Amino acid sequence: MTTTKDAAGAILEHVGGPENIAALQHCSTRLRFNLVDDARADEAALKAVPGVIGVVRGPQTQIIVGSKVGDYFTEIEKLRGGRAAARAAGETRPKLTWKRAGSAVMDFVVAVFTPIIPAIAGAGIFKSFLILASALGWMQTTDPSYQVLSAIPDAVFFFLPLLVTYTAAKKLGVNIPLALGIVGLLVFPTFSGLLTQEGGVALFGLAIPAISYNAQVFPPILAVLLLWPVEKLATKITPGPIRTFFVPLLCFIVVSPIMIFALGPLGYGLGSLLTGGMLWLYGTLGWVAIALLAAVLPFIISVGMHKAFIPPTIATVAQQGRDPFYLVASLAHNIAESGSSLAVAIRTRNKTLRGTAISSGISAFFGITEPALYGVTLQNRRALFAVIAGSLTGAVYLGIAAVGAFALVSPGAASISMFIDVLNPWNLIHAVIGALVAFATAFVVALVIWKDSDSGTIRALEAQTGPAGGIAPNPVGDGRLVAPVAGEVVPLDRVDDPVFGGGILGDGVAIRPSASAVYAPLSGVVSSLLPSKHAFGITGDDGVEILVHVGLDTVKLDGAPFVAHVAQGDRVERGQLILEADLEAIHLAGFDTITPVVVLNGDAFEVVEALTGPVEAGTGIFTARTKEAARGTV
Picture 1: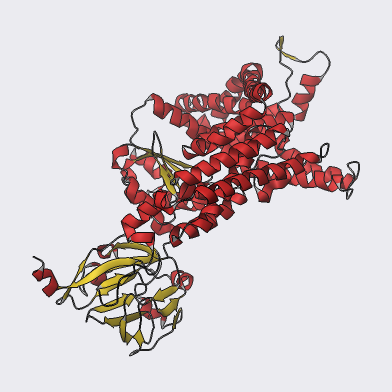
Picture 2: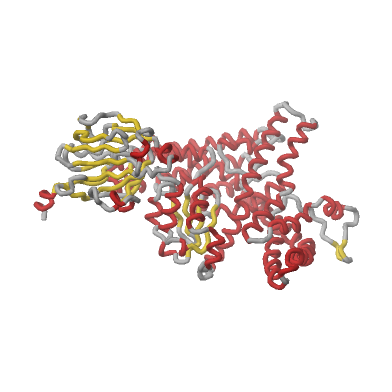
């Protein structure tokens, strides 16, 4: 089984190596690379890395790896020496263009808002449960217990400016405690009280705008953006002995007044403008706006631009208490992705695509759409058409029913409580109905129009593994060997072992296994099965001698993680179960699970037509052809 570290190393290699990375960030499912030379990134190789769901090229190279993106990011940072080491070595900066400038802005938005989404989402769902408890009569809003519990999610939104301050300061490399100290003024109760008192308050005769900054996101961002150059300049001009206290002092003196007189009101106005813009669009076009957005969301998400909706949506939920636009459209799209993928799973005859469609369809049903989007729908136009149809019809219903979302979280079955409205119980009911409409429409459309012959995914699989991406109907003794285990086929020289990697034992391939069952790669007799059960040999009906060695140095495990289902001397047929290997136990013991498949009698046979890439057990991987036959064809 390929580990996260292995996959991270492969990703690092295929983006051009550490020296080709100008900057690296990540969001909820994507690694976002700013590369010095985009041409050095090998897109095909990146897509073949186990764990990589998709690759998006543009001003940024985005690699979609799903929910474990943080683990991949950490491993890549370790391999490239970390940001500090990269800065110390002097990262090469790419040439600034309009596209890269836009990409930098998007990077900043993602870095600031993505980390705080769990807190906001958790608080929103928590509050929705309280609302449900109140609606069912389990608790009264006047109960002290209810009031204490409701203070928990309310505190998250009240101190939202501080959460944004933290992530913005971290992104820019600003002193985080200093940034929190400066922006903390905006939500300090004494300061807020002065602003709201009769007649307001003035500083040196200048009236301070009376604005409530709790739940605001743009004022703290602007404050940190100003603090960034001020702190750098103050550090540069301040002598070392007094830098510890003098730099913060200068920052307080410069940034705080500008923040309360200019940046705070400007940020508040910007947030109101964006919120008003979304509400205006919804108010002007109504359900049409929601339907159009839902229909184009697959394309918006595919290039990562859906993150641009996060700031105004946060502002809308914080200021209005509900979002009737983006989150509602997302519900229709997410569930439509699920319906389309599950229908594909039913219709397709390709085992690899079926497995992908089932898992990604379930994931989309619960609100995580990237696996379905990149693994199924974007690669198959008929599935994509079904998603658009389902998104459109579901969003039309949701828009006409005026459904609103009350928590900022990816909509799906797991987060459906985000649509609970204590003042309107039908809001949740309409949300469920709209989701069902989206699912049913996408499911039926995909079920009706799907054709394996028109599948881009199946064409790609056939290019790698032969027709149907599965067991080739080759007769026994034809010299064609199939994969003994599911995983990723790599060239033998990629094995970190001089005996196998150097071809000393013979030619062949290696497989990074993703499953525990190991099957016979050809029909013949089990010529060897070691007591440690980590390796076995089969002499085929045409005389070829094959060795399958599960893992490197796994003989040292004395057979503990292996269970054999045959004995030496047994007759086996191609595809018959030979042994089972506990890959997790092998990995935890510190051994590599890569599995070489080698032709031992290379004096008589040669390996031809070797394939690489993801395979299922039973997929053809290479042909062992007699050298006499080869000479006869010359």
